Image (cartoon, rainbow, N blue to C red; front, side, top):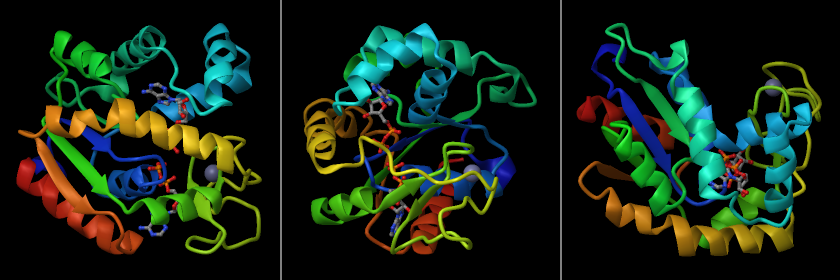
Length: 221
Ligand code: ADP
Ligand code: ADP
Ligand code: ZN
């Protein structure tokens, strides 16, 4: 299956739709690097970089980080060796980028528009339940859930054994703002990418979502 997957893939969906969960499953099946802009920003905050300190002021209140900051961050990242296929062409799985029309334009301007866009469609009440119960690994970014995806050892990541956290933006106030940002600024990408888009029912179990996504990417490859 890895040989037939598309080179440049985007996971699109609301906060909590299951993008990170699907991405972790996909990289087990496909030869591709997972780029989560949320994880990259949280790493920058932890490292105390200028970008991190700026981003934090937006992330804490559930607002989007400015486009110029995000575009610079991703442009630098996709140029690295682990984002290249054997023939040297760009290959990556984007999770959390683009989130606005100007961010999508920035990919196109660099000849990096997606070959496939996987859109995880999830009902809003399901999203809120997923976000409020999410626990996250600050080490490897793996998402857990107090009910739907419990770690083997309470509070500890199965993969890298880091202590899990309840993200400060996974609280009611910021969640509402993030859903507003999604509806206002990110949802228009569904129409923008209609030619490359495959809609997946994200309300299903994680294994059924992954199964549908694998079928979709192999068809798109
Ligand atoms: P996103 O990256 O889109 O914000 P995550 O993958 O972090 O979403 O998932 C959000 C929360 O929902 C996490 O707690 C995760 O464990 C849980 N989750 C993800 N996919 C499913 C699913 N198909 N069914 C139930 N819970 C899920
Ligand atoms: P989720 O998938 O739960 O929405 P992420 O980890 O993807 O969360 O993003 C967390 C926060 O990081 C967002 O609420 C936003 O502030 C910031 N962020 C991540 N990616 C982008 C982006 N492409 N553009 C603007 N802000 C972003
Ligand atoms: Zn981990």
